[in-house]
Image 1 (cartoon, protein in one colour):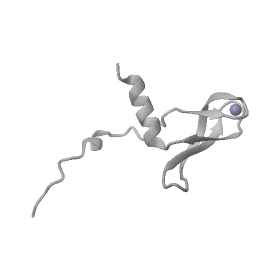
Image 2 (cartoon, rainbow, N blue to C red):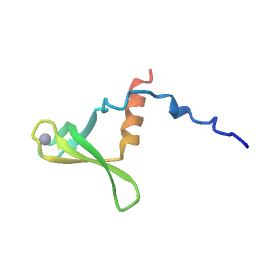
Image 3 (cartoon, rainbow, N blue to C red):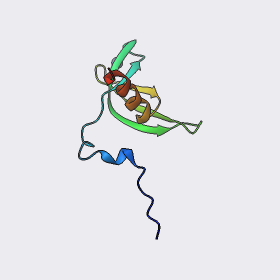
Length: 81
Ligand SMILES: [Zn+2]
């Protein structure tokens, strides 16, 4: 009978799932930072999340340490003042 579901600040987002955040990763082929396309989150051996995708410029596979949370955290840091 106890309803204690009042601590969800993240449940405030609606209909913003389709716009994928821009993922910037280091492309070893371009030897610089590039935008990552088709980024998917994968689990590495340490139990952490990484992102796998393809370079928007050369199309080669690229990798980014940290999952979507790291990307969101970085984006949040950029937009904060
Ligand atoms: Zn590249």
